[in-house]
Image 1 (cartoon, one colour):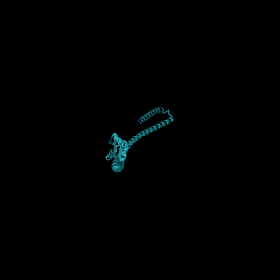
Image 2 (cartoon, rainbow, N blue to C red; image 1 turned 90 degrees about the horizontal axis):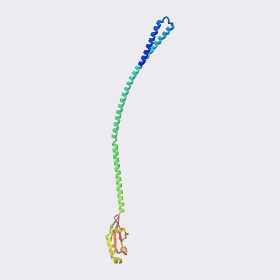
Image 3 (cartoon, one colour; image 1 turned 60 degrees about the vertical axis):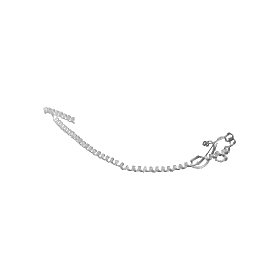
Image 4 (tube, one colour; image 1 turned 180 degrees about the vertical axis):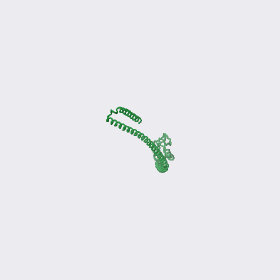
Length: 237
């Protein structure tokens, strides 16, 4: 804006210099100037006056524009200050609301924490009930298993009386081979794995020693099933 004002001032000064020089020239040539030249001079003066008025208007417009820009800047600054204050108030309100929401969130778990504890107690009670049921079932099953095992238990017991009877029968009924070659009677429990058993009768004992001499091994045992006597097994080899 300053450069424009300087240019306009120089232009006006240049025009004034031309006019002054032109007027001086006209005074010297007043007698020679026709009417047409006078009219043209008047036109030039009108043009100059109109240019001065336009230049003044330009200057006024420039000044008003500068003033308006300054006022606009001031308004913008005020609006910015107002918006900043409004934003600060909004942010302070938001922070307050966030703090309230956080406090509510912290309070809810404290209130709801009782529910999980109750659920945990219920779950523990259910687990205890299940454990008791399982224990009862296992106890019943173990009792049944024990009963079944007892049904399948087989036991043996040495029968010394039967061994003595078998030995006496052999001694009372010596064969010719036993008399000729001699013999010895021995009680041996391991012969149960080497020969089959038989039920005791005197005749069966005699049949077993019919061709025996030398070492004669005998054994007898009682067979029990679940603690109940079943029969007596006799062995001679």
